[in-house]
Image (cartoon, rainbow over all chains, first blue to last red; front, side):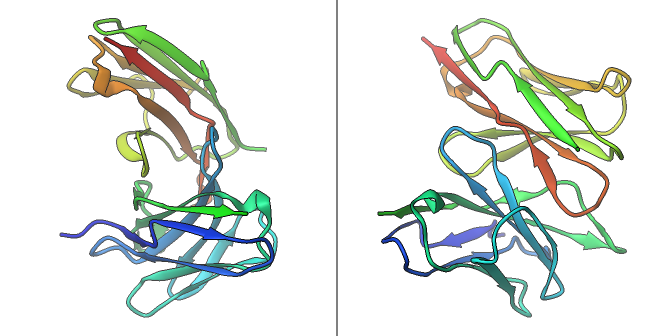
Length: 116
Length: 111
């Protein structure tokens, strides 16, 4: 049973560019959450997708957008990259049942984004 | 505002020592508190706590929650170098949407 997978592993971009990160959830999971983790800090919630819709959003600008596909996989898009967007981007999957999202989230290995 | 505060931020011990990591929180609608271990990349799940006073245990790791005083501790006994990691505490504040994370405690276990 494959766990949560993310691609790419590492990515280097320059300021102003756009980037798309991808995540496939764990088998049986239907909810995907995205986090940004800067060096030395805990993960910061970006948004969560369920049933192909953004269910909740953290305190991130509109440059951060996402999408969920019918197979539950998800993409995170960041436009107009800034140096401060350099971070580890983590995807976590979980299961929503009866309208309630399970507490336990399984994380992917992350994508290390460096913006030069 | 819901928040999670972990202490200490950093800890260096020798193999065989016992460590206690703290996580205090403020929340309007508590649902659960989770502990994760993060080594190189993805955090890995350790424990989920929902009830006060009930210890969760896995090998040398154990954790307990105090919902009256609003904190949780993670204990690691007989530490090993493989325990070196960042230990993250996360709070599910009952809004069923996101986890609120602490900054983590960076633990280094020296041989």
